[in-house]
Image (cartoon, rainbow, N blue to C red; front, side, top):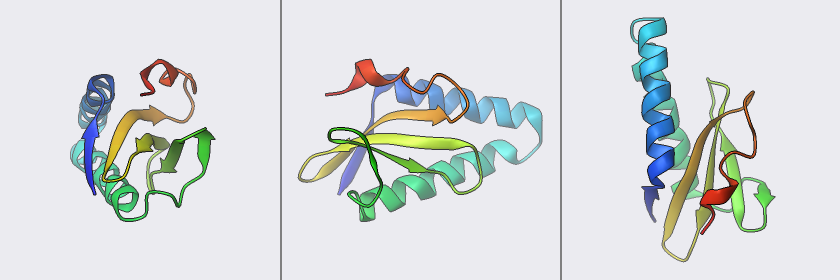
Length: 97
């Protein structure tokens, strides 16, 4: 299965990396790695994580307070949001396919 990012999800991801880079050396890399591990789980087991809306799933990261919100079709996943779990939980809803 392939995956792609919604353009706004790319911005969220990059901003979070920059935040963690500024916070502590090496933390930006650790965050990016955690998100990529989460996406790997999504690609390998797309229907495992709970739906937050019909056809939209959320997989939590292992080490950071983030969730990756995504939709799938037969051969790909669309990353709709890289969302901090303590902020505006519905900010991504306008991105649904």
